[in-house]
Amino acid sequence: MDQRISLVTLAVTDPDRAAAFYEALGWSRAASEPGLRVFDLLGQSLALYPRADLARDMGLAEADLGTGGMTLACNTRTKAEVAQIMTRAEAAGARILRPAHDVFWGGHIGYFADPDGHVWEVAFNPFSPLAPSGAFRWAGYPDPAQSG
Image (cartoon, rainbow, N blue to C red):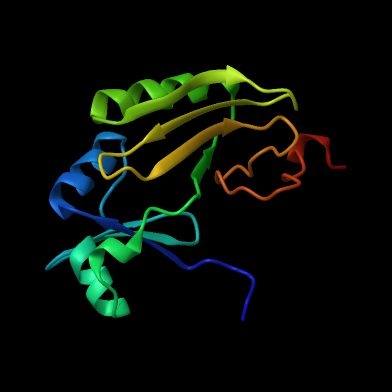
């Protein structure tokens, strides 16, 4: 298996409501099909799919899907951008779990839950600068201005 994630599917109660939330964050929808809303990301896609349908596809009872202990993360170019995104998410209907704040390792993060309870971390990591395209990798991308 290649070391990548191609598609993240979030179980949602109402795909239209969930899509409206992400559109209010400024995202553009790539596809809409019966019961499915898709947003293309940098190298992946995010799908919003009805909880009941996802459970059925897996052969599980809907209650067995659980919520999982994970976060989806969006890294930013600047510390100030964390607060901007948190404000926009709250205005779109997110529940702020922890406002933007400095953390011990030198970064700046905040957490919110989307209307279906999926937890997002918005983070500025000064040790992992983003590529000009916005792509993220753990050790960051070199600053093109410093290559020589």
